[in-house]
Length: 310
Ligand code: FAQ
Image (cartoon, rainbow, N blue to C red; front, side):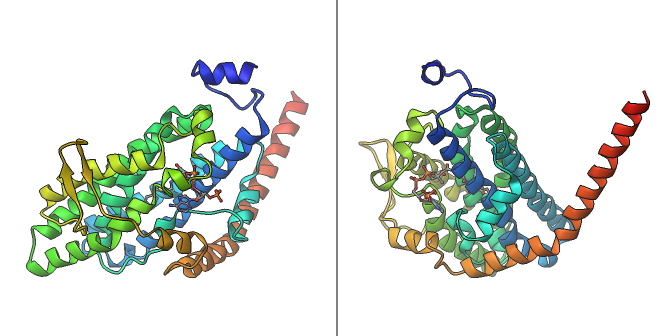
């Protein structure tokens, strides 16, 4: 079959190519979840815009949060090439029928959390998303190229916040350590359940959507991050973490999968608050969408009149 041959030859599938219904559904599910994560992911950081410690930090944080909105936009646009409407996907999110990443259900308690999110959350996002630039579906892969460039910048700014704090006063260093203590394990959970419990990995890998399993990417993230923690002078909160000469990787402690399950089911520290804020923002933004529609209709009508006249 042509589709299978294209996948085997690493030829990109484009919107007008025939594709199996399961492939289309899997992509819509993953791209939509990813897009929802970007826009819900604006909330934990948005919480600190008014309280950033300097004008420079505020400007950087605002730009980062705007970038997340932009990522949502590229991703919803990529999903639309599969025949779904952005409005439809947002409805599914608001009805609790589609997911977003577990990580955004944790509170941001101090300024240092902006550093931990940049360093760890964006760091995990990059590790997971760089392989998605090679996703077999063209529009998703291309959107990921731009997103990953911006995420790298985000990760550097988080690292720099933590570096500044950890080389500041003892109280600032303690605040940085506390943020890393709270965000370390949830960041490892971002990669999803272990491969043995992953429902989609095998099929998504066969279709060239995922390029690596959840466990392999998680391990790569740990291997990349531990030496960076040394540079920061911060401790990874895992007593079992050690370099394993035999495997050439860091061995790490057991992840609390019950916690991930609970959060995915909606029972995390901030699930209710995040969803409530999202629904309210959507309702409050209705006038903007209506105005944009009216503007587009007016211009379409004017274009028709002009072309009739010509
Ligand atoms: N949270 O069979 P698998 C960001 C669900 S980065 C919630 O392994 P799959 C940037 C999974 O959907 C975060 N749910 O699933 C940023 C499935 O449920 P379903 C977003 C999770 O799809 C930074 C079930 O568990 N990044 O936003 C999670 O093959 C800072 C079974 O799992 C992406 O979305 C979880 N952690 O692999 C923004 C990347 N893990 O759908 C703001 C693209 C698993 O059957 C600030 N996505 N589930 O109901 C992916 O790479 C994949 O979808 C995985 C999951 C790896 C997340």
